[in-house]
Image 1 (cartoon, rainbow, N blue to C red):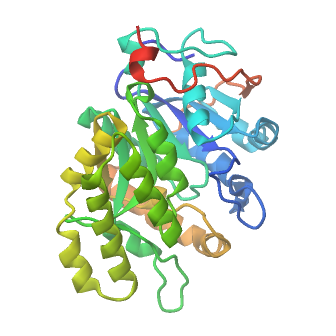
Image 2 (cartoon, rainbow, N blue to C red):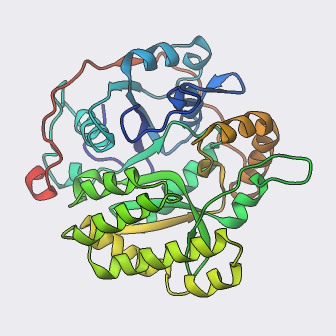
Length: 361
């Protein structure tokens, strides 16, 4: 379904909707199926991607039976302008990402295949999570364009603190309090957008490690990730040093020592983080800072869900207005086509995350 050579502005999107060990249930439910404003979050993400000109097709990986039932809704089917494929989930996040990529290559079939040449190995894929109720098409477009211009193997999206303040609690209005990466340039929040050349990542397992230890409010998670970085053959003391300074600045922020946090974070410029992560992943890693925060609002607990449901219409209107100011009006919705939801059969676990030199001839 994917052409062997894609223009930079046209990339397939893989939506992570799995419910494996790295996912976090909310209200006892896989959060991607929870409704916000009457629509399951995974359906809302799929619908938004239909309006992103840079996205060529949409693949959703997770519980195939539940996804088929959710994404077959007539209200969503009427909006489809791009191929939509459901892929049964594998054992973990990394396998979901890698095996879906292998199955989207031309002629891959049920078993999938590794990229056959440099052109296929250079294929970029947009990865994003399925619990993003406030994403808008212009934000995704801007991220894809900026990350493609950076010409990196892995572009990780970040939102500025200023773009997140509209979601804070205010007098008479509930909100969500954010945690940030404290860097020399700004306080930045990961926005759940990733533009990746999967075959060019030399150490893909590092992505899984960082994701599983992403909840940095718990000391055990902090120590666990630091240890994994230290013992990883691509890590080392310098990476742990920068990571430690970021955590120390975050701690100072939480206890109200903002001025001290500002002093500490000066030791962690973005360029150093990029170099450290490039070594850790054995790939060209870049941080892509955007001017919007809609994709940085994911749902990790019941309070966030309740507040998002209550404030959804207000926040959605504010984001749409902001997106139009920054990037212009949203693209005109393409005319719905006869595209039908496709559900793939379970495939064997093959080509299990080899390094690039083994997967590219």
